[in-house]
Image (cartoon, rainbow, N blue to C red; front, side):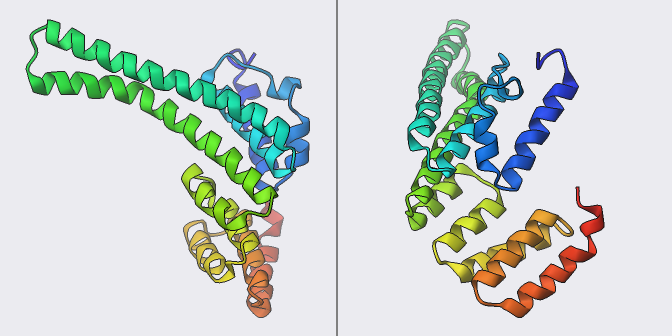
Length: 220
């Protein structure tokens, strides 16, 4: 199980990362139901799995199955929101029963909120990313950019969405900033090449490709 093997967790994380980085969405979607992507009993790990698989299904145009994952995540999101509301009320009640002052009461409520808010944000972003990829698969590229941004996807995914939407100048600008923040990273350089080529800056794209060739021997 995932809990019993740290190496399995690392392998699973690495597998998802690689397949997403190289946009191998059909392969990723095809792994659903296998040992690699089985339920773990760990809410965070299963959230990541469902977000990755749901997004991969959406990216390949399998809207029906993508929505199965999205709807499951939506239900978990609603459950977490209910848990949050209950926790805050319980924290406030406990603090008031203890005759705490208003500052202490508000702190107790905030502490209770902080224990759950991260999970809520995780589910929200997962649902939004799946919706973004469904929109992109339908050719609704302009709308997908806003959704991708809300979902907090990688800069590389955002650049790809900008290119699809025909916002090539924005893509070039974003790609340049991405390379500056991630010097020597293969994916960042590859995204920059794609953005430059899409913007018809072929000489710049060629120059960036040469940079990529120089570090090819150390590609991870």
